[in-house]
Length: 444
Image 1: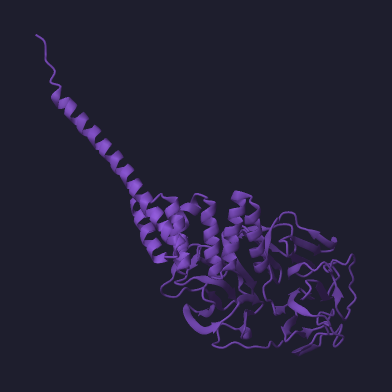
Image 2: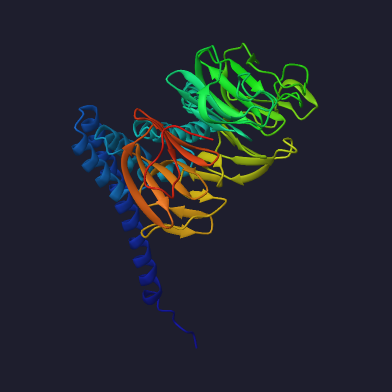
């Protein structure tokens, strides 16, 4: 007896499956066609500067096809036109995650419009690493130049303070090795408690200290020093243990951006992002540190020095060996180093620190730090609390888990020994963050 096979029950599911697949394909094709129509219309509105209309069309397009790169780029441009820059990073994230160069360019533009130059530099560095494009390098270098030259009107060394006020350098403290720049109290332990003119006759721009050596960068970008040189840290080709008053010019190349160092060593950051070193008894002239290709910031305090590279990697080293650097954090856009150790802000708005600080209510905390409830541009510490500069250029004081809005603006914040410092149009503010008000002039 032969069994008959009934084909109907077998063919019916196959036909249904085929119909479903055809339907999905047709729907997908139609969705993409419809998405493209919305994208084209959005681009038309964008060209006409009708930003709200463009946003509506690009959002409609992305609801149909979330992978439409043109719609994402157009939406980001429309938000930029509407000055809603806070929307741009989230819109572009799928594209920046996949390395889209145009997305990086738009993100950098948004960050520049928010005046977050530190974050824009990180974005531009990621861009040039992907494109190796001349125009992208030009943008990166322009941003690097803005980041490198920051106000720095106060510095604290081992037993001296330098402060720049009204285009005059002042100093206070001990003058055992000439670090005050003047002959008063030279080679003695006499303490000059009040700041007095430091005898610098040039046109000062920024001041720094490292150990018992004081440094001034003048308005031409040249570096001057006073004080200790017994380890050859001035880079003059010789070492001397003899106390000496007055200022010596260390460079005449006009390209010094920032200075750091430890007792017996000097770090010089130049305007091209190169890092140079002298001292510790073995290097008597400035030599380039080859392990760092492009550096965006340096700082030091006591026996610790720190370096931030343009790709957002933060390093630190002990003063006894500045050839051995350890990585502290990545994706860092800004950092400071002072009495409270290292404090840093990442491109993801994570606030990290070596010391650790109690976070206020509303902040998200984790193993790597805390994410504030507002965008932080820069942070500094005095070892007691944190001084924060937000995305609008306004200052906040964090102390003992409580956040205080100071209702004052600043251009930048940084650490200078026992102070957290704010500089801006209102002048110099020196913060002991356990107190409610800053001081404007240091004493020793």
